Length: 95
Image 1 (cartoon, one colour):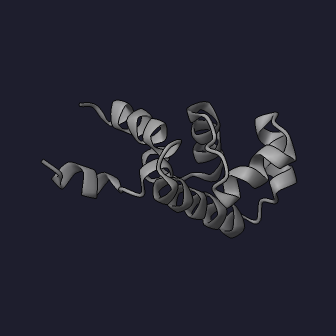
Image 2 (cartoon, one colour):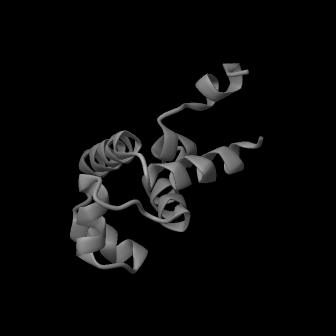
């Protein structure tokens, strides 16, 4: 299974798994905080509502992959890490 497929699968599972969704939300929130990006600014960058971003940051809902891709590119972080918490080196060593 390719990295892109794993990322999509992780996002799909997170809709039903509270722990995955909360962990993803924590990574997203931490990344936005470190970059000094407010929910309003992120919403503007992604063309979504500020409430959407706030829900993502709290783990209430999960952003679509396109939002993760745009955020990752803008904030210069790995989209796979942002979605799954796994770095490339962790992924490479996995069976």
